[in-house]
Length: 276
Image 1 (tube, rainbow, N blue to C red):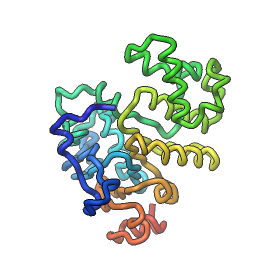
Image 2: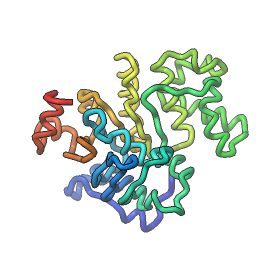
Image 3: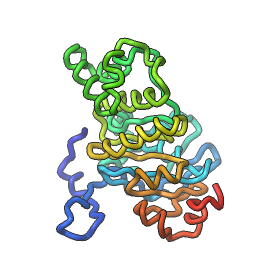
């Protein structure tokens, strides 16, 4: 994980103003300020202002086409792979503007891992899937790689299921196992933030439950931002929820409040199934 500079440590948000409740103090990981994004002439994100704090699960909900995945992919600049994209505004990651020309995208993506909607293991062994990132970062020592592989698979709660199959092709795993393998592959490069784009939408209920339980464990060490269409999932696993609609943030608050007493009528209409 990156080391905070003295200036960055000043960038602290207090969620609960009770000075005795130190557990509720969290540093800002992402501070999005006036973000706009266009695909050519079509505006997909409109004046997004969001603060994401560390060691929490932040869910992003909203109907299809509302900008959820676009926002997620902007947080690690993956959206820039589309040539017609342009942006305005700022996204500060740990106090630094990720759109600054001096900010190396490779550094950002090392700190900010990504887990996609469909499991995407490499056509390699289970071991080589996990060791891939560390090798790219220059780690060649077999003993160190062995330790990273085991630690990452344990972190993704899948070690006991695959420890005797490390030299088998990852494509032989079930869909749920493949998704947890992809999470382990993400953990292997020791990120600070994990982005998840509907990570359970292609999984069966049992595999979904395992991934949700894993997310709850991972937030102790990582900040997690998850896009989901599943309202029940958002209410189960997230600490805060942002409701997107037509490229705008309609409401952003503690998940418990949003699902029990939302401030906006549009939010209530969506989470109660009136549209979307």
